[in-house]
Length: 381
Image (cartoon, rainbow, N blue to C red; front, side, top):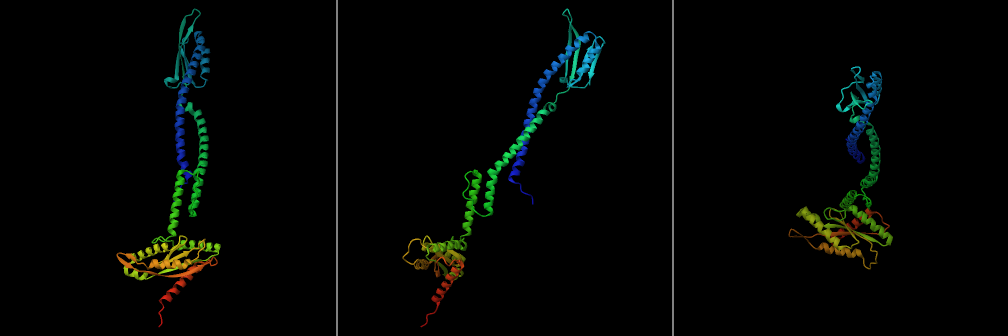
């Protein structure tokens, strides 16, 4: 399995080439500009050097002092960037040369005519002085500047990386960690921090919405939309706690539909589903807003009659049982057919002391079957 890249490493892997490219372009532009500037300065310095050599050599060459002229030329080759020097010796009918003769570019060889002015003001040409200088290259002129730029670049890079990691940790790292922990715990992340970015806020709100929808789907019956057993246990636990707090009893009704199996077998599952949906709607319409109607499974329904915080002068169990019987006594129209279905109802009371949900449902189930058996028992003459 290929390891997945972290957000930090992926960011740095993409940032570093861009920074390196930016540095390369900046260094190249700086090197070219520095090279052009150095060329101008170096040309001025070499022109001055050439004039100085010519001025120093004029007197020895006019006096035919070849030895002194040769010594001056030899010493001049020791100067930085001077490769060779050539000057004419008219007295000896030869040229005085010193240094390493290299084939250099024309720009690196400078020449100047040497003139001697005698005591009468007459000018005499002594020949041409030629000096070969070391060629000026882009690398040689920019090496020092590039090294300084490299130090600046590395320092800037370290500051950028440290700042980026700090910013990522506060802007993305911590929020993503909180969101990841919430996802692992299957819990909503509420409220969403106000300082989060719009993208993270949108993702978190979408996650919260989807989690709520999934939780609702997990706690509701797909067919009828009623709470299922999981939601029923939550509502019944809440009703038991309320009964204990108010010190008044609540009730659980367990309903089992009569004739449902016959309708399902005779008319098919579609008719059975229509019956279940109709029963669910009628049960909800028959109870109070504080009560809960749930589908336990199959053709079994449960009604949790919560304790009313206000005083009730009548028994809600009897009233709601009567409403349910009247509602279910009405036929269900399905494809033009009138389908009749009834219900057997068993009740169990809770007062906060009885905390077992399974025990309450078992008691209600037992009471339901006892009532059904009494109803179905034959009448003896």
